[in-house]
Every structure is written in C-alpha cells, then in structure tokens.
Amino acid sequence: MHQRIADAIRRGKRVCERFGTDLFEVDYSAVADRPVEEMRERLSLPPKSSAAIEGGSAGIFDLSGMSEIQRRVVAQHQGDDT
Image (cartoon, rainbow, N blue to C red):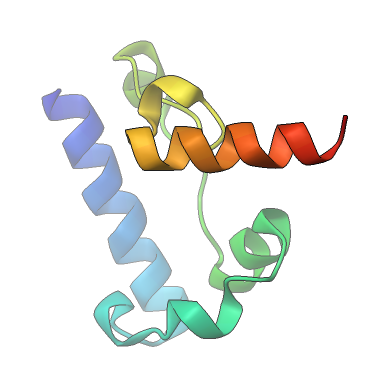
C-alpha cells in the first residue's frame, strides 16, 4: 500500500508542476466529457510506477478499483451498447 500511495503523491505533484495549477482548483465538471487519453495528455499525467502496479494498483477501467456506484454506471453504459 505504501508504494501505491507514494506513487500517487509523486504523480499528483508532477501533474501540478506541469499543469501549473493546484489539482484542488481544477473544475473537473468542465472537462468530464473529454476522453481519458486527452485529459492524460493535457495534464501531462505520468504512468503509474511498476512498483504501484505490482502492489495491486487498479487501472482506470478496472472494476476492482471502482466504487459500487461507478460499477453500476459502467454496467448501464455497457447495456446501452447491446
């Protein structure tokens, strides 16, 4: 767990430095409709470290890393495509 937290802090600091804005000041509602890859590039989001991944850090679309509400939304969207 300590590897995952340390990696998240490192990545967040790097984003703040490159984006030039404290991440608490970003209006995420204004960009919620943008594709994930576009926002990763826009924020200069670095990839997770291998230690964090090996420590079990879930990927962005990994259901195990989502809350129950997020899993329901994914299921609803998947139902829309069928």
